[in-house]
Image 1 (tube, rainbow, N blue to C red):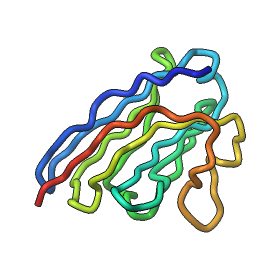
Image 2: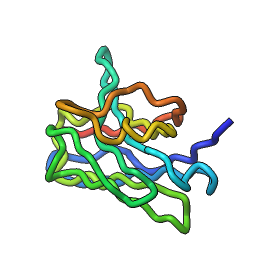
Image 3: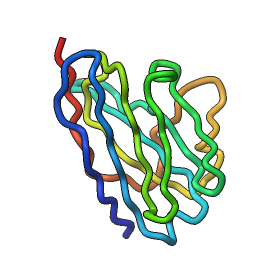
Length: 129
C-alpha cells in the first residue's frame, strides 16, 4: 500500500500563492505518472496537472495553465504544485495521485482524468475574495 505524505495548502486571499507537496516511496517515483487533482464541495474531482516522473514531462488543465506549476525533486521522491495568482474558484480539496499507466500523463483533448489507482488524503486550499 503506497503511502503519500502530503503537505502545504491553507488559506489565502485572491491573487496570493500557495504550494503543495506530495512525497512517495522511491520505488513508486522511479517511472510513474503522478498528478494533482481537486474537488470542490458538490463537484466532481478534476485533474489539475500531471508529471511523468521519469523525465519530468508535464501536462496542465487549461484552467490553471500559466498560474500553476507542477514539479518534482527526484532525490526526495516528491512532487510539488506551486499555485500563483489564486482565484476563489480554485478553492477545493487537492489530492495527489499516482499510477503506473503512463498514458494518464498525456490526456487527449481534456484535463487529466481522475482514474488514477492510488490517492493521497488531500489538502484543503481556500481562496477568499
